[in-house]
Length: 273
Image (cartoon, rainbow, N blue to C red; front, side):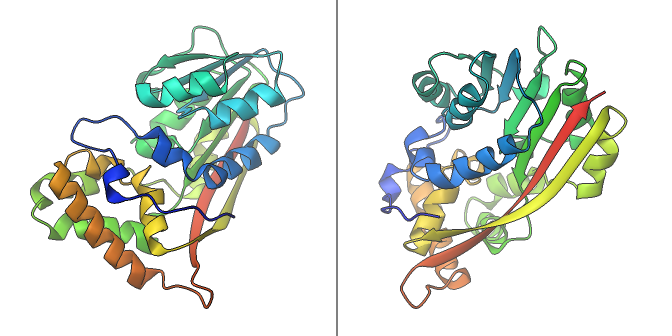
């Protein structure tokens, strides 16, 4: 766990049509990378020739993968050109392309498909997850982790602010279409027909922040993106102001002034038959 200086609302560059903000995302790099490392530690491969990092973001997961499999060809994909620019600097030995995971198809069956905090932005997991796993070479590994936060106060508050503001006509449909991850046994049923082994687990991390405002910045760099990108500059500031106020009530400060954010994540690792 770690604490970080708070970013001002003006630093959250998520205007309508804007790209993701790598600087804001990487402000909480320790929290975001820890789960990727925990996932990678459970990948049962001694070596790999071809690795795909789907939803690679600014390259924090790609860097871990190049260290674990230095001889592998690593290909990272993401929809954000800003994120990919950072990834190319962070893991220069890898190749990166702008692609949507929903329509992604590898040219050659990979030994590892790695998805760190990316699949929860996509719908239809009953189709998506087995489709991705089916691309693997025999003995290859599908490894993914996703936040399981739909019932957390932080995300309930996102939906509430979206519904109660002057932007509701634009944001309520976004809230309704936000993909919810499935039950853990669903992922087992989708993967087991393709796999010789399936491992699933849940971990609730507890992140330590200096204030509830830091919690807002943490989500502004990720989960709030689909809401904020549809707002004007003034609306974005107003949305974040309401969200920050709600977070201060939902996550009261501890005796030392710090704020604790419980953050559950779902992990899965499947070995292709």
